[in-house]
Image (cartoon, rainbow, N blue to C red; front, side, top):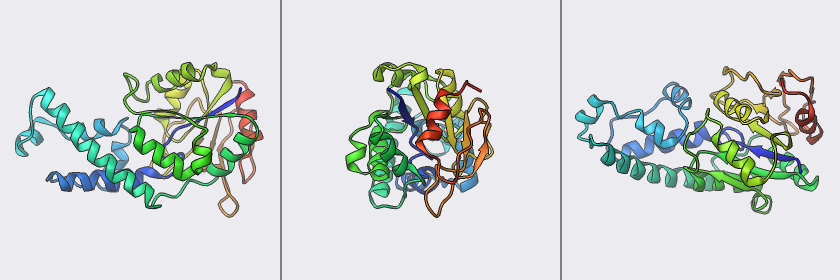
Length: 258
């Protein structure tokens, strides 16, 4: 059965700029850290896979000493887990408030894929409650219930390692030729391609200039009426119109790998 496997952040919704960044900054304020990431700061942080890992990038010896933070590995691990739980709660509340609208074409393509008998999945190393909240808001509760969700700390290594996609293939019981990944980042493309999967990229707020080598199609979005998609790279000869259709994704799935 052909299956669409969506990344979450930047694919289902523009979550990084309007969700994760303000949630990180609110968390830092609540725990008394003198840190507020700017848009440019966060453009660099998104290159780090995982929220706890992004927070951990703060913990230089000087920063730890200056702010009276635990210096031992166990203490830091517990502290990061506490910070991340609070950040996830703030982020989930933002999603549920409707502050993060779905990206163009998501609900349209999911509806078409479900009607066409395709499998549906999300594979993300973001926290599972966050992923499920975004999915339900982006696809609607009825369609969201049809998704298999692979999220959180369920694999040893985060993107660009292929672990999350290899897990999805195993659990879905499909081979690489049956799954098409929808990603938005260079790290995500590398993870999917190294798992043997073909990939379509819908670029997002922080990723437009990244390296998408190995992707079968790169577009501005999947497109909706009034918000057309623009094809940015077509290495396997798939040329969608202003609305990327399920037939375009099927063509990307069956075309030779780039």
